[in-house]
Length: 289
Image 1: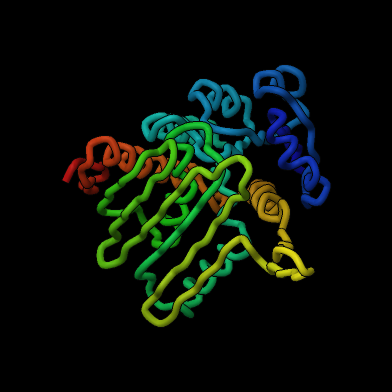
Image 2 (image 1 turned 90 degrees about the vertical axis):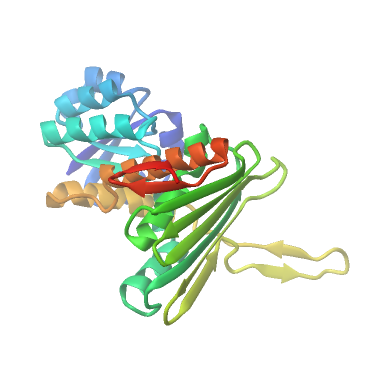
């Protein structure tokens, strides 16, 4: 039985309602990683927390033998992420990047359709995401970037970004003969968000959005809509994957290297946005084309 520590009020609110449904784990709460290690280091096996984390904090937890699930972005830069991954490797603990969007049922179905060959080779990915502003410029776009890397199985070879991160940004990624277009806009606080994703492959196409099972009602006045939601099922699936990977002694589905790759692409996107120049991936690094 894996003993998990959820760090901070945000993690508690996101996972506490579903924690009892995780198979093979028990849950405790703590305010900080340091507090968790001081108060109950011998009674926990793994830590779930928000990123980005300081390298020193990761080393402290890894040195204590604690596996880590860190919400994306896991670090403030790709260089910092490299140091974090190296620390976890040194002490033999797992580092999973928290990216619950991969576990959304509609997103997982598209990925499964690609892997099973139903769509053929992915040629175009299109993502729209309207939502609340996130904690940092990189944090604002990194999860959508991870989806693109995941769909194509690699980082883009060319990047061009346009817009303003505070309000609207559009990313254009080249993946050889394939491409992705991603846009993210800040939604006013009085409006609901929206997410859609489509993939066109060589033999088929798939589309999904988060306005699932919408029912339109007409009652004599303005039409209204009732939508259903999967709630926190995607977060439950993510937490279960973390626990199962530890229990089975294998790497998690989303590794620290995946988190690092998304940060690297996000950094290059931000450079393209500020410079107005395209970026090209050469010898493992991005530089202006």
